[in-house]
Length: 267
Image (cartoon, rainbow, N blue to C red; front, side, top):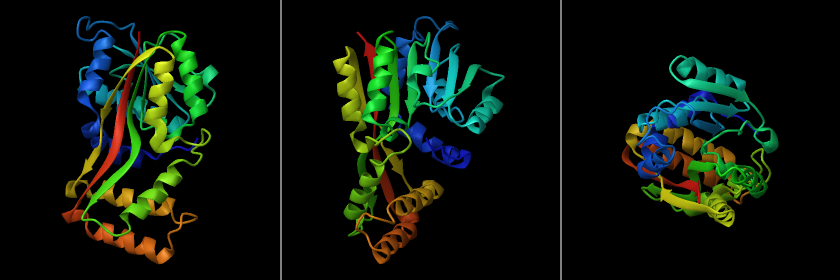
């Protein structure tokens, strides 16, 4: 499993929070008892791929309080940053762990498992193993910002569809968890959860990026171009043309990147 830089995680955080479906997040908190029992320090959230604590910050903005946050990530530097930012203000347990070793993840006692921008990176086998473990204890699951394979640019460019097709192929490559589900993750995750007796709710959570997101858009465009610069049928001239066009239109265009949020509650 590869890690992400603090700079990239910080850069995307505002777009992630704006995109996150607030109704579904509120349902997750209500299920935890936040609405009726705000003082419940025994409630444990395990956040997989926690990074610097973006999910903690997002749910805190939406009313989460008096919870034990168990932050799990392979990257110790990201966890150190999460503790630096929040260690004095929240009940935090940090665990540096390989998410692939699901049987050893610190899920014991968890009331809900959360993950943000993670499930599109993992394999079907990863999801099956995780659900097998949490369903035995009737643990809820809230997964936000799962990429759905759609991107809409304004203004349009003749190569947009070809670039998107190539990018979606790349999204299905191994990201450290086996062949990634990529755009298929929400459908697979939903079916797997329903098969194990969960009630599943889904909501759209698209990034909606404008000129004030210029830095994020620049990184997104460069990242897409870097991901598909080989083996996807686009020659160097085509890819350069597309990238230069996109960069030149950042300040007078927009981009919508589709995502889904998923909340699964045990019946």
